[in-house]
Length: 151
Image (cartoon, rainbow, N blue to C red):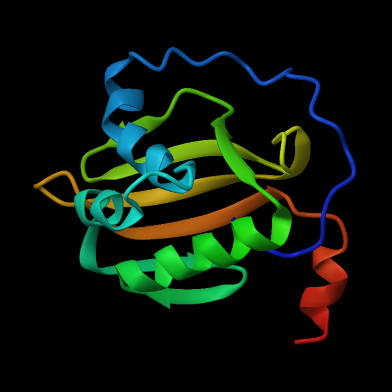
């Protein structure tokens, strides 16, 4: 989840259908649940179950450290965009203590506007919690490059 400009493309539900029951998807399902949590979900409990205390999140927007920073970022983004949902684009891949997760971020109250696509490289600890995320944008939000050049 990066950037603040909104892409105007309407999502046509062409996202490849990923078998969410696969072992790899199941291991990363709590991570997706955190990002897609609704207003009635206990986000603090989700974050505690998903992330280590000192999780590090590296994205184009900067480096965030700790669960609270991720929770704050998520809340600010969703509030600004009027809603957001991350969907898998491909089957997640696991390699030892790392995972690669390709996503599409949809925004708006109906989560139908394609905002960006990207790939998260995730570091998973022995207890299954995530201690690091590095975000790569495969398709940046509209206007993101121009805004980034001015920082």
